[in-house]
Image (cartoon, rainbow, N blue to C red):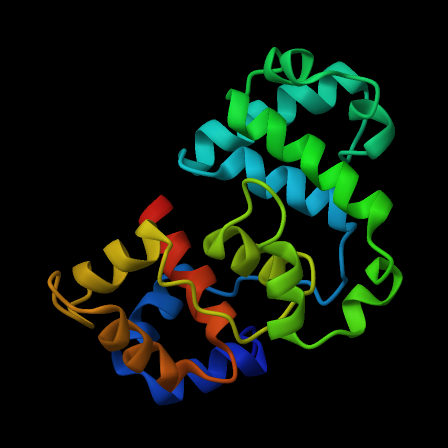
Length: 201
């Protein structure tokens, strides 16, 4: 086994012959264990909704440059109205969603213990926010909470990758996708990272 692979990648290589070829092609992909700021994570996720990774990264970069920041901060958006946020290069609904996130953070009495909640409870709370759906909650779980065991059926790129690799058929049901992803447990997130890398390259 390549000593450069993480233990999670070695597990996936052993347990999925199809995915193992993807991982060996990609090489090691680092997945930080460091939890990120929830506001920064949620704004990034909102920007990424329904657009390509390339387009999302371009918009994020432009907004951060405008604010002269490395991360999204509440103070940069708090005094902007919806139309002013929209003018940053976002849709009206995404602008409304960012405002809703600010309101949620400032008024959520459980926010300080949010990291300590179980995944289902966190998801339930996030889904109360305007513009935050299942996919966004799963991305938050992956990239803010750093949960190693998340698979997002709602992610079109993941489904595309699984179809291309013939892990499941294009007509497969949600249950069939999730049944296949079950073999990646407890490291589903790491599998997703490699499938995304495959599609993006």
